[in-house]
Image 1 (tube, rainbow, N blue to C red):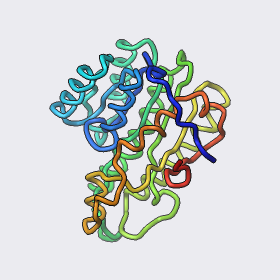
Image 2: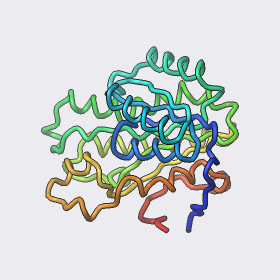
Image 3: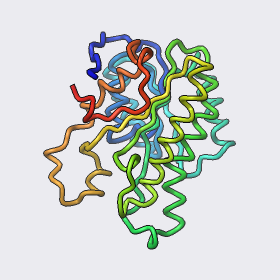
Length: 251
């Protein structure tokens, strides 16, 4: 199936979209790209300096109204999630999208050598935070015309791979979480849920996982933008797709 990537500038005007991990890598490119098409991006990250830099760049280039939410997803709990929902609701008319992009690799190790502290940190950041954001932020999407929740997947989500440890397990669980939300939310609301595997991309995480790989042969994170734009398009509303893989739908 070929996706239609014909988007008019401004088709995301006034849409409020949260991007986790927006200060670098794929998240940064998504935030810039959505802003270029008119979205007011809610920039999440852990580094205030990095968030301020992309905030200033967006305001200067695109004249949209971004917002910064600084938070460590490893320590996100129900109270912090409620506070985040309150901040967003006070500053926006509604929430139109949640892009769960932030993730950590932890370490490459056999399961028997994996330490509990790293295990919990990876699961908290990659999985538990996505559950909490869906739980506490999805009510803010009630008034959105085309609300979307987008999870970021990986090739190790569909088949476990030796030495990928907690990261692979977290991505397999996120896949299951997205499928559950699809069945629970889509019949009762306008929310559409997607799970997107961006494939091999030139990022710092990829470099850490594959230190001997030549990064010049990998696609740039900016090449993923059309997929994220498509998720917010009318065409995606009419497609029953649970899992999108970049390579399978590469046009």
